Amino acid sequence: MHSRRFPITAAIGFSLFSMGVIAAELPSDLLLKKAQAEQQSYLKTVRQLVDIDTGTGQAPGLKTVSAMLVERLKALGAEVSTTPADPSAGDNIVGRFKGNGSRSFLLMVHYDTVFGPGTAAKRPFRLDGERAYGPGVADAKGGVAMILHSLQLLQDQNFKEFGTLTVLFNPDEETGSSGSKKVIAELARQHDYVFSYEPPDKDAVTVATNGINGLLLDVKGKSSHAGSAPEAGRNATIELAHQLLQLKDLGDPGKGTTVNWTLVKGGEKRNIVPSSASAEADMRYSDLSESDRVLADGQRIVKKTLVDGTEVTLRMEKGRPPLARNPGSEQLAKTAQTLYEKNRSQYRADRHALRHRCGLRLRTGQRKACRAGNHGRCRGRLACGR
Image 1 (cartoon, helix red, strand yellow):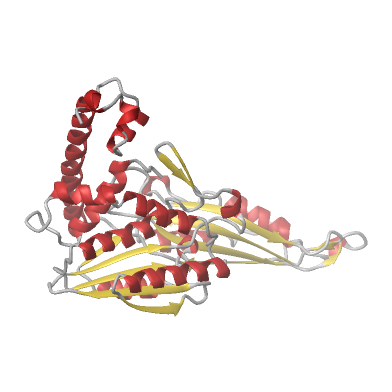
Image 2 (image 1 turned 180 degrees about the vertical axis):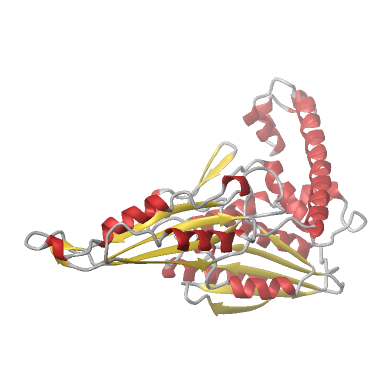
């Protein structure tokens, strides 16, 4: 995750504009300055979040961060409720703010990560130049902090020109949001605008995302002693291997559909022919019809078995559906691009003016010192015009 001043402050700035702040209320140059002033507090929040393990299913860390987020939302004036994200570990956290306007906004992001227990201790948050590092620093604890500090700036301006502003933090996105997708769908339907603070892979806003499904492959065979009577058994792992080879091309590159077999299990003891075996696949897709197509093709393919006497079943576990492109999202993206360019121009103008005052040959560290008021490092007040 970049920790450069502009990407962070521009994102905070766009968060505020997207919630209805208009130029007459808060000019963009003033907004940018306020967002810049918020950067160190923002990074402190990211550090606090990153240094706690919250891998999906890790109940202790999720509980700790959940309590922290509830406290932060209440301090901002939200009416907060929590519900268990069964069957996942952790809570869905919903904070509601009431304003004086008419439009409703939902800001959402997850607070779980893909990392295992102990990762935060091994790789704690750190800054190195213009980058921040740590487990979940971008995906998506940076987004959690972005929401909190955008709300703080709104509160500082006593801005109430919205009808309802709702925040949702969920604990199980990395495994498909099985315990939160229902509340996500319900809240999304209740709001005019929905913003997900999941990080894109570049400085951009995302208007379409892939859906996620799981494929579950099960094979039943017959156990027997591998040494004395192997011929009496029906080896489920051999049949599973055969099926995985048959199913390896279920995806469709032309449609952007991917199916990758990632988990395999079979057998209990080395001297026993296994009576069962299973595998799981991760499916990503953008075309809604692909779910039915992949399942139908897969179920047709598994009918061709290699080991006589084995039974093979394939089923789909549906996860998060894709977000398809639509005119409303496209218009929001254009608004984002306009605001981004406006703030980037202001940022570049400020940087150019700073370089001019401080001398074009100053190193980055000297320019930062000058901005902080430490003129000794920029060769004194005469050198920088201060």
